[in-house]
Length: 312
Image (cartoon, rainbow, N blue to C red):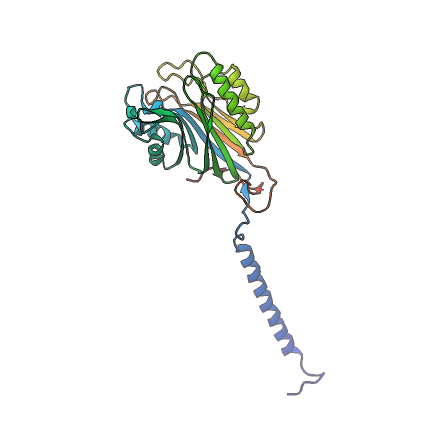
């Protein structure tokens, strides 16, 4: 039909309205898809503004309890009850005769469902003797830091962990035990230099074999924050007659970490030391964007609440 200027415009208006409605629906679907689409590879999602960390340090006396039985399953039960994200262990055997030839770090990791790293001090009874770190976070790399020799050879074991907001370094120490502090302080100085070289947040934990008001402990308080014990019990050794505080936890910086609670767990049989458990919160910086690379944390989301550092 020939349309003139005087033809009825209603059909054309209805068709135009229907066309606009269809276009609006298509646009809405496209916007919804864009919002739901995951970030392209290499573009990180925002990290949480804070992470909660549960840290344990425990000298396990190669699994030998005060009843003189080597019982690694007993040690595992103690550790399991503490529900830690990361555990610093001292006096750990690897395939040593006195403890039944077992790789203790590997076995404890299996029993607890954690990753592990071992740092050897020396060869001993057909195997090696040293320290270990267990972690629920993935261990990116492990670095045994050689310390000056004392009564025995020593290392500090450092691991870099893959946490939600970026890497965190955990350093485990077990300093010389002899009465004079010369060896101990020299070892502490080497660890202090290593800490000063780190660009990541860090946790320092272990058996320092020294009391609170000593130059060894002062050295770390100058550069880090002590996660001071909050309970009435501060003594960590010995389990059958606790009379001294020699096991500690420190964290980097004065403002980056918040110490929630630090407790001594009075387990009186499994080892000659008590375990120490620290509840910590790591505040992540809100700045920082760009593609995620191995050593670069994701941008923090200031609206997100604290998350557990290591997935369960």
